[in-house]
Amino acid sequence: MNVNGQHYQSIWFDESDGSVNIIDQTCLPHRFEIASLKNLQDACHAIEAMQVRGAPLIGVTAAYGMYLALREDPNQLAVALDRLAATRPTAVNLQWALSRVNAALRNTVVAERAAAALQQARAIEEEDSAICEAIGENGAVLLQEIWNAKADLSNPLNVLTHCNAGALATVDWGTALAVIYKTAAAGVPIHVWVDETRPRNQGASLTCWELAQQGIEHTLIVDNAGGHLMQQGLVDCCVVGSDRTTVSGDVCNKIGTYLKALAAHDNNIPFYVALPVSSIDFTLSDGIAEIPIEERDAREVSHLEGIDEYGDVQQVRLCPEEVAISNYGFDVTPARLVSKIITEKGVFAAEQSLLQKLRA
Image (cartoon, rainbow, N blue to C red; front, side, top):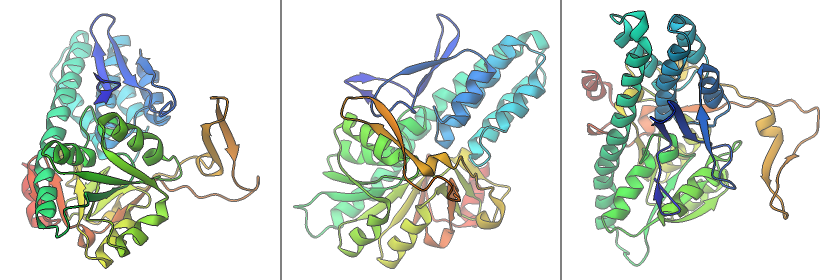
């Protein structure tokens, strides 16, 4: 990820002091700050407070959280697993990473647990970056085909995305945005419609910031504008990420994704979902019935944070003080609305017979 001309990852291990460093995403886009995770509590807080977010990055952070916990006390393996598993219920990479670290520790003596956990965390970090780059390359082929088929090449390829599925949601590159970055690198003129993504506004605060750092042309829109743009022929395709995908191809992503998929389907616009194989939950087949949907703090809806005319970050309340608030964090897009699933292993139809093969 490019930040002011310098390469950064969203998370990395500092060998000099044994800390785990993250880009604190709660400060963006107004301040670029690095936070240092020193122990289990720091790692849990980073996930729960959304200093880190996005399914792949949550998984990597959880793996490092295991290392930090076992470095502090190698006997708190079970405690660390339970505490980290409870931080975010929807993102499947969290459980996947914890299971991988736990499996690596089964035949490890207590005194060597921290070192073994660190080895796994660093491996997962390295693999995630390579996986996301491969997702970008595979997805770019689809977007290049759409560009080649466009009748009017005087306008750029217009892509709509929802939430932030970029480098900030992973170690590097991202999932949906990796597709956009690789397409742009291939020479396709590209423009991105960025949904604001209420209530936390990850599109407005994170995706716009990230695209600007990469020099990708983009326009911020309100969440409910996407359908109108599709009706007007101003969207060539949609590309989003996923926090959990069932083996049947149902996709769980940030709240509002389902509505974009419905609009895309009604307007015959391709709706692509970019994700690592690790985010496919092969134990689930019915996303609507089986995926737990996280409900978050009502204050995310009732209040809005921004920067005032003096450069200070402020929070303001938007609604009556006593109003009842519901704040679902995710929704499920049925497989029938998904045009293709883009993974590091290739591009697949959202069909169980095809996705099941990826389990191996």
